[in-house]
Amino acid sequence: MKPKKIWSNLAVSDLARTTKFYTELGFKPNGSNKELTSFVVGKDEFVIHFFLKDILKTAIKGEIADSQHANEVIFTLSAESKSQVDDWAKEVENAGGKNISSPEEFGEGYYGFVFADPDGHRFNVFYMEGL
Image: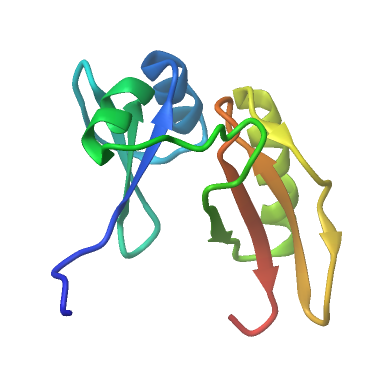
């Protein structure tokens, strides 16, 4: 298998709230319509589509995990410094997200935290020395 591209599709309950949250975090908008809002993230411009739950459920012909109570996937965002990790933790709260953990050292050379967006999708943020 040699796909041309990979992206993610996540279920949300409120497109306007999702658009506002990720825009406030500085994610680059990638278009939207009545069924989804989309962003590109990072240097490689990884695409994350946020679909209304009913639309995504129909498309995959199956159930969607309740992201408020279970993790369907955890994305990792790399920061350039410890101070950037700290800044991002504040940005998440200011934008309406929930910090699951506070920024902290973990393992050798790692510093980071975990947050959830308003629909419960989790992101791991870390700075790793040498990366």
